[in-house]
Image (cartoon, rainbow, N blue to C red):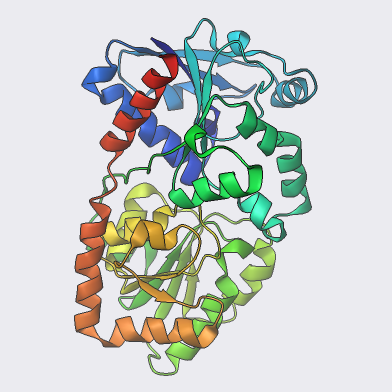
Amino acid sequence: MRIGIDGRSLQEPQYSGVSVYTQSLLQALLSLPEAEPHEFVCFLNGYALNADAIIKKFPQKNIRWLIKRWPNKLVTGGEIIFSYPNLRQLFGKVDMVFVPSMQFFPIKDHTVPWILTVHDLSFEKHPEYFSLKGRLWHKLLRPRQFCQSATRLLAVSEHTKDDLQEIYHLPHNKIEVIYPGLGAPTEISATTHQQSLNLPQNYIFFLSTIEPRKNLETLLSAFALVRQQHPDLYLVLAGAPGWQFKKIARALTADKNIIYLSYLAENVKWQILKQARVFVYPSLYEGFGFPPLEAQAMGTPVIVGSHSSLPEVLGNSALYANVLDVESLSRAISHLLENECLRQDFIAQGRKNVERFNWQNTARQTLNAFLNLKQ
């Protein structure tokens, strides 16, 4: 079987949720013994694309790269207006195509069956979390038609599947839930961590794109309350700047006990997670939610809100708070700072919880979905 892969999310300069999903899943797929008889054809495109940097991450022999140097705006316009280039032009002769996230894509072309992964519908449920440019981009993407046209959909959580059925009225048997895995941590020494970033010993941590959906204003206010009892506590935030970052950045500089680190390299990220006293993730909407799981993998207790996919992914392994209420969030932080028994309980439950998420299992289920599509 020849399987086309839309690899354009691998071209992101800084990897986060979707690009991490695409890279990790493709690496796991190619490493499966049962995938060896199949050939994977991965499409990349970009006028100034550094394809070599991507290709070297995939040393397996059962992948072939289809690299184009078309201007992205021309491809985008062609696909929106004409559904051109078509699937054969993008992938050559393949039996099916896998699209790991919504991109501009020839959705009117039904000559080849294709599977789409849907990560979340935040742009439908909460358009207020997106800039005007972001809302326009999603409108041009035609996500409803995208999902309707796909032969089959993979959802990263039951919550995302429910949203697809509720908002797009899709039949439940068209959607299969396959949880993502969790990457193996890479570590550096604690000494290197402290020296290279000059971080304090006593801090709570937040990691994600800095944008309104992550609800950082409530976290900053809750941190101010907690510091009244813990004056030596620091709040460390890391993540690429997103929409309205300048507005949030002003608040980050108002307190000397708040440290912002921007985007983190993988090895540094894992070590900062490991050293944190508590990981606080007050996000208002998630389709899945990698960062809390990453914190649990490093033995750090987690605080989240009890909404969207988070209770499904974390179960009883996290401490829940009303993340829209400053006092509720500050109380949760204080509990985990002051109650060592509670802290250790959530650490143990977190380590057990992450065992549910394995990229090899994700890859095996995804390959089965590919094979079932051909039957």
